[in-house]
Length: 109
Image (cartoon, rainbow, N blue to C red; front, side, top):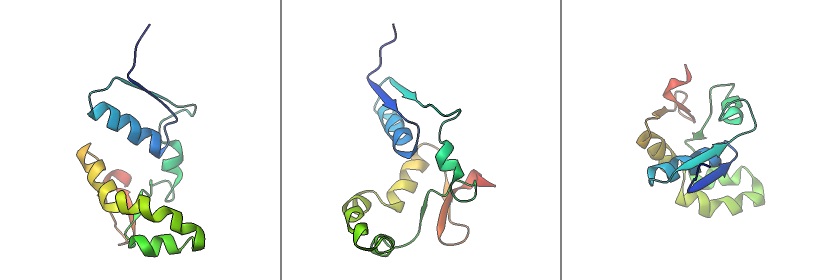
C-alpha cells in the first residue's frame, strides 16, 4: 500500500496549487481528478487559452461583484495576481497579459 502525506481531491485551480505547494514542501502528494485531465476547467477559461487572472487593481476587481465582492478583498490582498504569477513562475509557468488585462500562461499560443 502506498502512503502519502497529502491527498488532494480535485485538480481545479485550488487543487493544483495545493498539490504543487505540498510537493514544494517535500510532501508525497496524490492528486485525484475525475475528469480526463488535470485543469480541464481552467483550460476552458479565456476561450481555451487558460485565463488565469487579470491586471485590475484588487478593489476594482472586487467591485465588479457588487456587495458580494467584499468577501474576496482579504483573500486577494493576501494572494492576488502578482502573487499568483510569482508562484507560477517559481514552478516554471511564465505568464503575460497580451491585451494588458487578461493574464495567460505564455504557452497559450
